[in-house]
Length: 263
Ligand SMILES: C[S@@+](CC[C@H](N)C(=O)[O-])C[C@H]1O[C@@H](n2cnc3c(N)ncnc32)[C@H](O)[C@@H]1O
Image 1 (cartoon, rainbow, N blue to C red):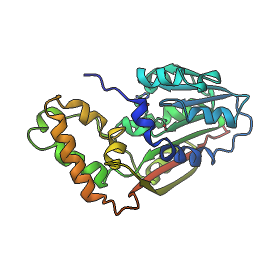
Image 2: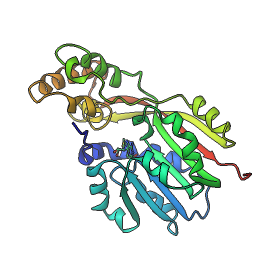
Image 3: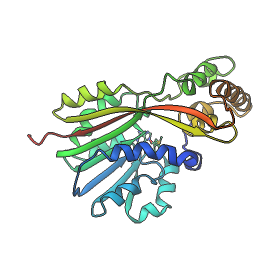
Image 4: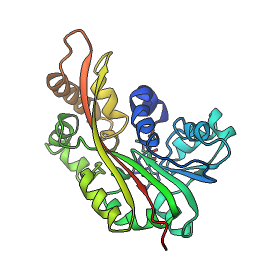
């Protein structure tokens, strides 16, 4: 079964999901880059901010999802960004060394369990003195993830959900050390955002657009409603609404690396 992203559902919290991108890109000091690439560009709304920042650059958004690339290509971002459907690992294998001035990947690498092994290829794609910037969630130990995993491991769901993709990331120091070892200057940090979400079961709506998506899609139609109802109930208990909105603390890990000019 192929796992599909739903751009509309993902964009339900576009503002909250966009802020880390701005915080990430704000630490890239490139002045006049020529080639800028966004790996895992999703629906392209954030990639277009790269075109605002560097209007003279050739900007490419790469994503493996048909639905995301279709949404991006149909959006106004396509006037300034070339969108390209590819697995980022294939893109890295073919881009050639030192081709990119600024390489960005926001909220994507956590979907590749082996992404620490990709760090040399990510750095290798960047020109000497260029920039690699990525952000990954650092909240996989939080109820928004653990409640889904616990429920999915129970009967009758476990038979369908065993082995489904689950996001995974490392702490900031791990990335910092890996990039230093490749000669980069590294700026790494963490931020916990307190998102105030409103509406019915807003934490469920949030996770169903990202981390819980593979689990929900792995369940057969006759089991999914009961799973969703139980997950919503557990999430309501973990993230209560006192009438002022539900607070979802969301820790994120940021890494901005400048590649070595010596080569
Ligand atoms: C959480 S979304 C982030 C989208 C966008 N960067 C943003 O910040 O809004 C993750 C994106 O990564 C893409 N993705 C996941 N694995 C990928 C891979 N191996 N190669 C390319 N894109 C991938 C998904 O299709 C999805 O659009």
